[in-house]
Length: 429
Image (cartoon, rainbow, N blue to C red; front, side, top):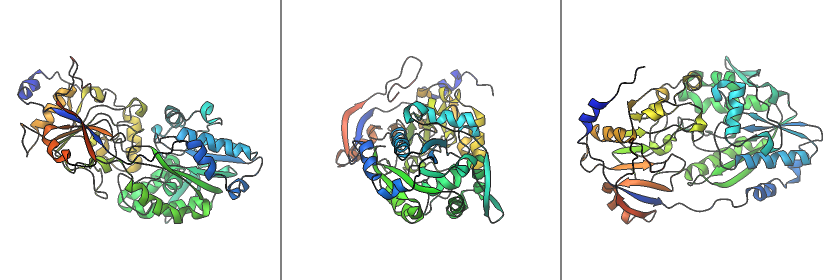
């Protein structure tokens, strides 16, 4: 692809004016767990949990493909708990096809999230080798060989609403069994019919995996609207399928959100695999890649400005934008993203939107592309990413509806956005 210089496009967009923006605090409950190690140790104090681990056992702890708040600390505490029983803990990447579907790529993902052997005080074993453990219909159910051959497994994974389908089980323990532990081959088999049947297939695949290994319990953190850990549930293996649905409902009630129901242009500073499996949480942005989930803010245009370094070039989610900029496009690496797309069968998230030379030009293009509303005073919302929503920037056109909102506090009156001499947006940089 040849990216052409855009001086002529600048002429087309030169008269498009950007509005002033105000800094707004979205007010959410402050109920984060202050001492995660102490909280988790109290949860693990049940003698029955320790009794499930025998001296000398090889115990696998699962590490997910997302950057989850406090996950390195949780894994370290679990490794210490396992060692206190005289057993040997190992962390494995349980992330389907993420990390480019390679041993080293998945290890690198964990390490980029702070999940290292040094910090967690136990080995990380990364392999894409799987073993067939059964069938759902004619479709193979596969499982990480190292986990399958271990003496015990402790499932560790956040419970949260998924971005592409709705069901009794979404992101959580069942999905960790069915997809995470399945590695690329298992995830590929499960996704065979797309997300339209995902809600039905996840528990079926998960039950086959559950029946063919010794899962002893699960540890499920749940995050509040500010991306902070507000609950950590320790669930005995035999109770996982019964308890997870209620925990999912609670997790959905605590998801990050925008208090504005509608805007003209939504601007997202960064996307990345560390932020969401889809690069950005469609439950916030309303940019769903499948017809099997709805919600989020209504808008005319979406601008995505950057891709996180932690994403390692996986640009999944960029296809949810109408416009991006050259900085983000220059970070695009196809193989990791395509591996996810080939596994999930979802193509839209990996499509390439309109590319503008810089952030300012991208924002002007979004306003120009509005087909309704007031282009001279557009409603615009600018967020850093879909995890950090405590503070957002909103254009003047939104202020009146926020002034009397008890869940919003205007911290700074409207002022122009800050750009550097190259047109790069400095706010939320």
